[in-house]
Structures are given as C-alpha cells and as structure tokens.
Length: 527
Ligand SMILES: [Zn+2]
Image: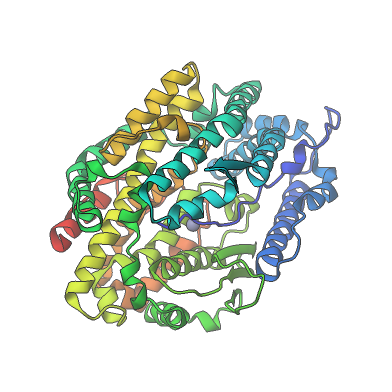
C-alpha cells in the first residue's frame, strides 16, 4: 500500500472555540500568530514524546493553557480583514488563517462525537461462534485466519458492528459539520474545501474521472494476474475480505533488511548533495526502545530549526518507503525559508505530500533499486516493480473514487439507501469488481477530503519528476544539482498550492497526464 502519512496534524487554533469572549474586541494578529505557533510547537513536542518515549499524551491540557486565544469573533475579524486586503500575498496569508480558524471551530464541536466513536471501538466486542472478541482485534484476526469461511464470518461481524454501533454517529458528524459550515456562509464541506484550496472541485472531478478511465485496462490486467498467481482464480472470484492479499508481496521483504534503511537514506541524499548528518535541525531517533511507536513519523516542532523523525526500523519495503516519505516531509520543513506562520504551518498539504512521495517513489524506480544494491536480479526486480505498480495504482484509484463519493456524501440530500448505492457504484468503478457489502464502508471510509492531498501529490510528483529528469537526467537522484533544485522548492514552505508549484515549474497547472504516462510506461516495462 501507498504510505499514508501519520504526519502529525496539528489542529492549530482549536482553542479559539473553547470560550466565546465578547464581540467588539480588538485583535493583534501578530500576537495571535505567535501564540498559535507556540501552541503548535508544544503539541508536536507532546506527540513526539508520546511516540518516542511512551509518555502520556495530553493535548487537551495544552489547549487549555492557550485559552486567551479562544475567541470566535476572531474568525469574523480575519474574514473582514482578508476581504479588504489588496496585496495578493497578504490576502493569501489571511485566507489561510481564516479557513484554519473556521475549520477548527467546526472540528472542535465535532470532537466530542469523534471521541465517542473512538471509545465505542475501543470497548466494543462481537460474538463469533460463541466467543467474545474485542472489535479492535478483528482486523488482525482476519489477516491471520487460514480458513476462508471463518474469514468471511469475521468480515461480516466487523461490518455489522460498524453499521450498528458507529455509523449513526458518523452520519451525525457529517450532518452537524454541514450545519455549522452554513453558519459561516458555506454550503457544505465540499464548497469549503474547494475554496480553502482554491481547487475547482468540478474540474478536478473531471480530471480524476479521466484518470480512472485511462488506467482501467492496466489495473484490470494487474489485479487479474495477481489473483491468478495468489489464488489461482480470476480477480472477479476474490472475496472482498481477501483482496488485501493481492497487494501484500511479503516474498520481497528479504530484500529490504532493517539495518540497511538508515545507511541507504544517508547515501541517497548525499548523492543529491545533501549531507543529512550535517543538518543539525533534523533529528533522527532510530533507537530501538521498548514502548516506542514502531511507525515512522515526522514532527515539525519548529520549522527550519527543529524537525524530528521517530522510527523503529523493522525492515520490508513498506518500512523503507515510510522512512523515505517522512524524510521528504522533514527536508521540506527544514529548508523552509518563508517567515510567516501561515506559510510555514498551514496551507495545501498536497504540496508537502508531493515532497514526501518523490523520495518514497525511489522504490518504484528500476535503476534506483539496482544501483542501491537492494535487488540485483533483474527478473526479481521486474516482479517487484509490477507489484509496486499495482499497489500504487490501486491506492490512487481508490482515492479518486473516494473523492467522487465524498462529494455526494457532503453535499447532502441523499437518503442512506442512495448513499450506499452511490458508494457501491464509485468503489466498483475503482476496483473494477463487485463490492458485496457497500453498507459497511459508506460512512467509515469518509476522510473529509484528506485524500485530495494524496491525489494532488501523485499528479504533482510525476510533474516534478519529469522536470528533474529533463534537467538532470534519468538518474537525477545521483546529481547534486537536483538536490539544490529541490531545496529551492522546499524554501516556499506551503505558500504555493499544488497548482502554483506546477505553474512555477513551467506547466499549465496541476496535470494528471504525467502520472498516467508513468503508469503506462511502467506497465509496458514490467508486465
Ligand atoms: Zn505524508
């Protein structure tokens, strides 16, 4: 699977909502920014300490300390300021701040229901053949179960638990979120997100539909080949609960030993003229300690000054990809050269995901795999790259369809039955095979458009790569000037949107055709 970053999302200014101070107050935005920045720093440190040293996480108490920032009138104030601002850069800065404040106000009101969902999942259990099993253990159980009928039973139990226990709450989250956004003049989350990113969702939907259509044949061939190999059947015969096995590729884990990750990371960036050991602002904690969170993550404690990565190497390609992905985020945060709080911490996450995807995608590059010494046998490399292509394309197709479905979910007006039918239709358009139980996932799959960041990153990373190849050759990852080129891009922080980065590089804007071309070329080479 494509790495879904656990990049710590800081809900900046969540605090603004906590208590309503009076209207008619005056606001010093510089103080607001520096307090919000300080709060972000403390929250990120809290997450780091929790993941790295197992310390108890208590973000709520940090929020409380910044109660002086809690003032819903600020949203109105920033809205007025941004509407009268004529300088484009200052306007953009205020836009970022405004959308962040409103988004956080809404999020804060929904947090109670989110907590309720988490608690139900944490304490819930199902009965399977007379045995009571905690809900949270069902995923692992399904993954490790040898018997097909029992896998089916576990899958059904999980889905029925969600339908009964958590779906009603998830439906309320969507409804309440829509009502709250209307108080701020937005129709729904679809309009809010579209305006926040300055991304025309109708045009973007046309782009993702084209992407789905143009990659359908390739995806069908890849999944069908995998189904024949793994199960000895056509992909249409593979049950929903067994689909994950098509993408596992555990046979390649031996090529990615745990002790090789850090040396390869250093060597790779040094080839691009970036000596990680000399970057004193990036701290890598790769020590193996008990109680440490195994999943790699990046923490931008202070942009440009204190950026941390915490990991516990276990090996396997997924672990390598995650480390390279998180280091991509870290370099972006370390080399930021804009001073504004909004351009350092807020904005379009599609851009930082792009800088994370670019190094992650080295593990889909034939020449890189060979030159790094990871997989020396050409035929193994070909099989591995074919599996990588299927995983990558499968994830991108999933998020393309999820985006289309989320638009219907958030705009409202559909009954539950209509939503379930729409979910089935869109997921089948992505998977290309029937989905047996659309009623299980039609609410729990909602990510409130976070997947748009990944879609932007798939498209933009291919455009950046095309630029790097044109300027520095196919093996650009061994050219120091390529590192210098990336540093110049990182320097903007989040000031430029994905579309603006593409234009900055000389394209007509964000364009999926480069990603589609890469997929076609890879398919021709590896299948
Ligand atoms: Zn990420």
